Image (cartoon, rainbow, N blue to C red; front, side, top):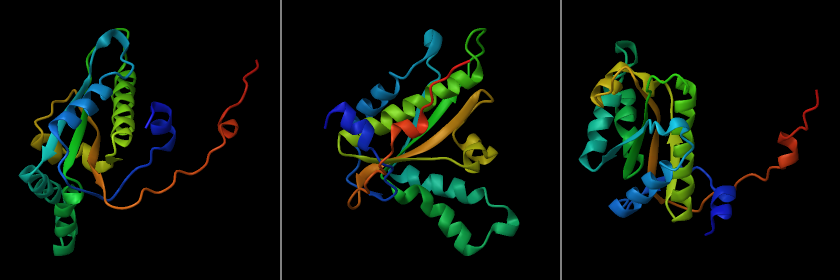
Length: 184
């Protein structure tokens, strides 16, 4: 698959299975992520790999975030199962660096652009992936489990594996619906 097709036909794949993502594939995904625009070459992006038994351990961490009023058997089981939806989770972290010319938002955008590169390459090599976010990315128990500092921001949980079924067709979008010529 060429780069243009990978970018224009990529879709999120919510249902993923094995086999495990290989170390070579992971290296390729991270290499693509690190090619994102990065003002001043700060390299704020980090990736934590969660695979194997660590997936169940992350499920325990997710379950621990439930408040006492939410803590039903079903809710605990659901939270524990969330990381088991793929053989690999790549936790994308932006380590924000104080810099006079590169604000926090620009560093977060750089890490996000890296995630998009990773998703595109995953699609190009036949893997499925989905970028998941939500309040859990900011939960103190999750942050502590990963050993994050105040400067670290979880940009998302990137679930990666083999698509467990036929990929959905991406919606057809007309670029002219999203572009306007600006005139002052």
